[in-house]
Length: 56
Ligand SMILES: [Zn+2]
Image (cartoon, rainbow, N blue to C red):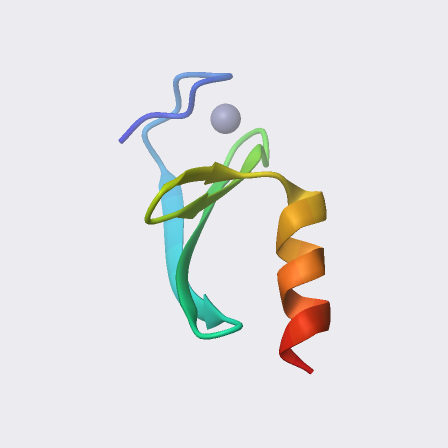
């Protein structure tokens, strides 16, 4: 797994559940590029925040 921005191999992956859905958060240890992924594909940060709001 490499960062798409700086090609660094040190990507941190965190799995969590938001609103009952499995979501994966990836962050590059070098340039701090952040990516959210669901089972269906990439998520925008806006979408993640919406999901978190609905979950409350
Ligand atoms: Zn990077």
